Image (cartoon, rainbow, N blue to C red; front, side):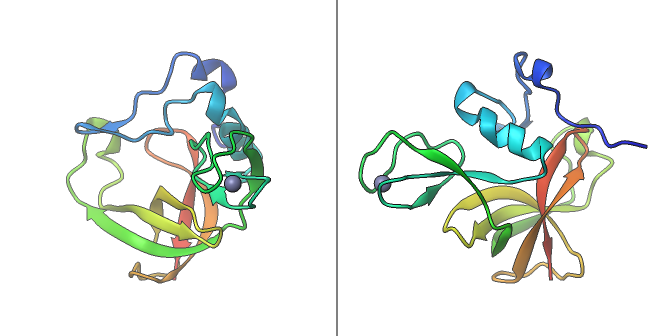
Length: 152
Ligand SMILES: [Zn+2]
């Protein structure tokens, strides 16, 4: 059985993913984030990087906040980081997530200095602040293949 993956032709319609009033951002692809989504298909986490000062940024960033360059390139993340914050979700924000509760969402702090909103999987666990986290890819309740972080 093959895992479902994000299909490029679906992106043009947008993928509306919200948690109450909060947009989950990267689920709404744009031309500026296409390489991020192509990376997921290859099971690679892609970040933005400034060629002038080498600083890495969130995939949605289009301008370097250090030197102002708008010539950001893409770089493959190491996949290593740590738990910056997390919350265990017991009440699903929509029916889509009802089958997944309880689950753990939060911010991972990547080695590259970038913080990303993600799903934490307690393998081997437990999920704690500053616990090491490593990249993996899972098909989540939305049926999309997405980057997650294994913790412990
Ligand atoms: Zn820069």
